[in-house]
Image (cartoon, rainbow, N blue to C red; front, side):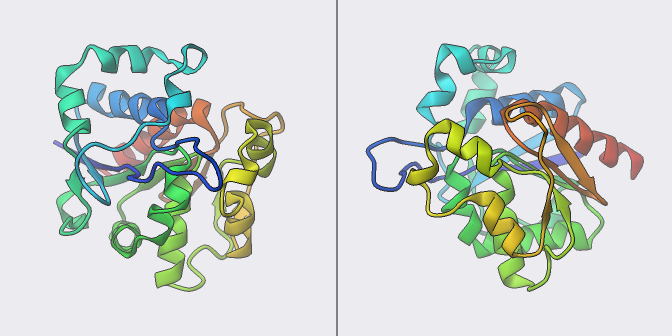
Amino acid sequence: MKKILIILTSHSAMEDTESKTGVWLGEFTDPYYEFIDQGYQVTLASPLGGSPPVDPLSELTENITASNRRFKDDALAQGAFNNTQKLTGLNAEDFDALFYPGGHGPIWDLANSEASGQLILDFLDNGKPVGAVCHGPAALIAAADLRPGFLQGKVIAAFSNAEEVLTGRSGKVPYQLQDRLEALGANVKTALIPFTSHVERDGILLTGQNPLSAGPAAKALIEVLESLR
């Protein structure tokens, strides 16, 4: 059975506001059920372990997805989510693929996590696919810190500057993710229309732009993983 590691943020605070962030729930549940329904074994981890914070906005009615509703009735999935493993001690050799959901949290903790950055490099160096969606690609920054030039020329999708402005949160984050990734040499490609699904593939690196891209990014990861059999 193929094993997929999903790494979630542990960070909930925004800059200069009482507003909270964390995991964008649909960006976890959409990929989670794509993987589970294909028979993969999924392990959840986060920098601090335990229960990750959930962005309150992702639980509003207008942002609820079918997978969110399924998750609410899935005691097994909720148990796994509330008891994530700590990143430290995890080894790429124990898994077949790696995936990062978004929510704003990763731009703080996963972007600066040496353990997470090393896992990304280890997966890719060993021919194992890595996926990320929305703000999840912030985790690639840590990999670039460990290996300068890592992002140079890589084609990726990530939450765009335009989308950040449209959410009204551009002043509540320490940097714009698109700008930071481009400064590290990445070729960030975005959808013509904000908040529409957009996925990019660069070898075995799969990235999605926004919440609507979470399921498609997971499907792209599955396609690559199956092609490696």
